Amino acid sequence: MSHFDSRRELFPSLSRFAYLNWAGTGPVSNPATEAACAQLRRLRDEQGRDPDAEVVVTEEVRSRVASLIGATPREVALTSNTTQGLGWVSGGLGLGEGDRVVVQGGTFPSVLYPWLALRDIGVIVDVVESVRTEGRPEWPLDAFAEAIAAGREPVVVAVSWVHYETGFTLDLVELGRLAHAAGAFLCADVVQGFGVRPFDVGRSPVDFAAAGSHKWVGAPGGAGFLYVAGKSDSGREVRLRPLEPGWNSVRHRGDYGNLAWNPDDAARLHEGGTPDVVSLSAYGAALGLLQSVGMEAVWERARGLAAELARGLRGTGLGLLSSDEDIESCIVAFRTRGDPTHVAETARRHGVVVAAPRAGGVRASVHAWNDEEDLARLLEVVGA
Image (cartoon, rainbow, N blue to C red):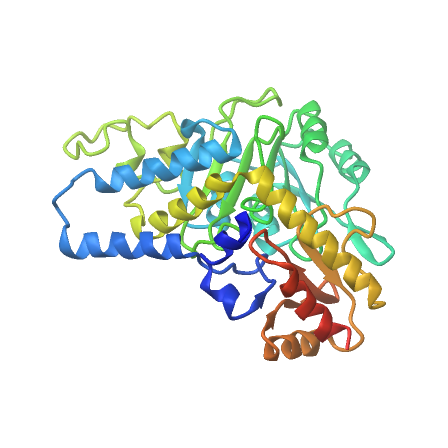
C-alpha cells in the first residue's frame, strides 16, 4: 500500500464514490470526524473539568494554520468561513467617500460583494473583467496594471488566487508587486488552493488572505482563517478595525470586570466571541493530516493526477476550459457533448461526483487522496 493509499482510507466517501468535487465541498476525513466527536463528548461529559480546553483548541489550530502558510500565530485570526474573513477586511479598512479599490470580476461572489456593497457610501470599485483565450476566461496581469493606473491610488486590490470554475491561477508574487508599487494592499481569497498546494505568505506578498475549512482541507464547514500581515510592502499601516468586538478581542480577555477597551494587537482581535471548538477541532485534525504528509508532496501527487485527467479528457476529444498548456491548479474544467448539468447528473448516478455547470462545462477537482481509478471512472462516463 502506497503512502497516499493509506491516507485515502481515512476518507470513507472515497470508497463509495469517485469523488472529484473538492472545489465544492470536500469529504470529511476520519481524523476530523473523530476530533469533532471527541470535543462534543467533552462538552457533554466533562464540561468544567478543564477551563483552558477551548484555549488549547483555538491556539493549536492557529499554530497549525500559521505553520502551513509561513506566518506567525499573531498574524492569524480564526473565522467561521472565507466570506467572514473577506468581510472583516472590506469593512475593517475604514473606506469611505472617494476611496478606490480594484477587484477581480467574474469570480466567486464572496470576493466581489464585500467591495460592491461599499459603493453606496461613495467607495469607487473598479472591476477587472476577464479576457477570453480560446473560450477560457483569464485575467492577465496587464489588465490589473491598467486598472490600478486608471484612477487615483487604490487602497486595495482584491482577487481570487485560484478561480473556482476553471482553476485559473493568479501570480500573487507579481500582482503583489504591482499593488504595493501603487501603494495598495493585496487581499486574496485562497480557499481554492489552501489544502492542496503550498501557500507561503513569505513568498506571496499578500497583506490579507482568507480561506475556509470545507473544501480541500477535508474538514466540515464552520472554521477558517484570515491572515493579516504584520507589515505591508505597500507603505500603508496594516490596521483593520474590528467589526465584531467582544470579550475575546482585548488583551485582558477573561477579566470581565475590567471594561477598559484595550484591544489585542494581534489578529485575534477580530475574534470577538466564543469560538466554535467543535468545528475548530475538526479543522485542526484535518490540518494535522496535511502536515503529516507535507504540502509539497500533496501538491505533487494532486497535480500529477490532474495532469493525467487533462490528458485523458483530450484523448476523448473533449476540449478543456482550464489551461491546456500547464496544470495551474487541481481544477480541470472541460466541455461536454451534451448539457453539462445532465452530464454531471449522469456521472453521479454512476458514482462519480463532479460539478456543473461551471464555465459552461463540467468541473472536476482532484486531490492527492484520489487515485487513477477515480479518473478512469469519470473518463468512462463522459467519453461514452
